[in-house]
Image (cartoon, rainbow, N blue to C red):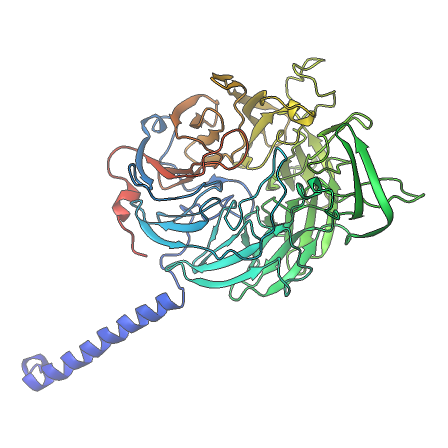
Length: 590
């Protein structure tokens, strides 16, 4: 007789089945409580600022959006929805998108959000205030987001990682938003903590470590004549992803010390006396990682205070300002340093151009060094780094030794606009404190896509409007310019100037490149091969760069930076008409 036909046997089997179901439920709850996530991060996702440790800002799996299909893009949803009065703050970082869920932080009304694939709220995390310091008012490019977030998150299978403008680095449970751990870099306990530490860079996962740049941002502090400038240093730190333990910390340059006697620097804006140095400002460049050599690459900011000159070396700067640095991923030990802009001591009491040395200032490196290969002279593949600088040049470096292999033309003339002599036809952007190539250049391994801002007058004592903005597409070896997208001049009440492109560029395997324009408030999609514009849509005040995943483009709005200020933001998802892959995810399974 079959056991299922016997009543007693049925009751036994039913009890066993019930216990099994209960066990599975508890296992599922325990799994969620432990922060484990299903499904994992896959190639179709855009899990971090650059979508990959090599810094490309390229989605090789996304082929739905093409130059032929992109003109049909429509707004699928926005958060918060139209008519909702929720106080959602400025979104400056590129959104991360994993399994159709969107992750982003806000600078104003500080919070960190996870949205479901349909644009509904999954969870929100609101950070504590933490250690803060009031910055003095003034300074054209002063950044102060309090406890908010200007960086993009890193999303892994288990957690979400992001650093705040208050210098606190967080690990959040991906499923629930629960705080797993945090590290306050302004507080005792963090190695060489500093009151001005912050995070503007985004993190990467490399060699089992969460690695991110930060440091003491003291650009505005010297405006206060009583501030003993400056002792902050940029750093790159490697955290244990499970508990936040500092595995290693690389600090940029030598440790600042008190000078034997104060140093006074005079320029066209006046005099400022310095008591400590040489300081190196925060690392705002998101690092990249070469797994083959175990190397982390990143760019540095400039000196906020000088080094003490000696008879043997009268320089006021060191090799660590406005430089590309390579360190070992296991130990943080320095491998090499290559400086791209010399003599760069700058803060908000100083002019952006020094007539005495004919040097442009604040020309730091925020663009991630992109790792790709080119043919060597013998025909073998050679690993190189492509990186943009605020001096307006895009550089090609050897990854093994940092040797400069080439660069696009860099403007060396006086800050007079229109230019005299005439601009070099292959110059990408002009140097300035808020110009040149900022951050977020992209590559597909064959071509490089650079953003650019001309704002030469910001280097003078009486800055005017930005002069121009553009995107330029180059061959990977920089030998050829394929196309340039020049933004039209904007003439509206209260503004008559250029349209800067400062956002990160996103590229996909379907053949499109997209970016946002600051003043005209557009999301622009172009054919990556020809540069022809295929879609142009108004999104509102914007500095955020877009991300591309599963047939969708995501972009955040709002701004607390320059030119335009809109302290409330939104997250917008664009896709093709009708049901798509993300629509079928619905509210999601997470």
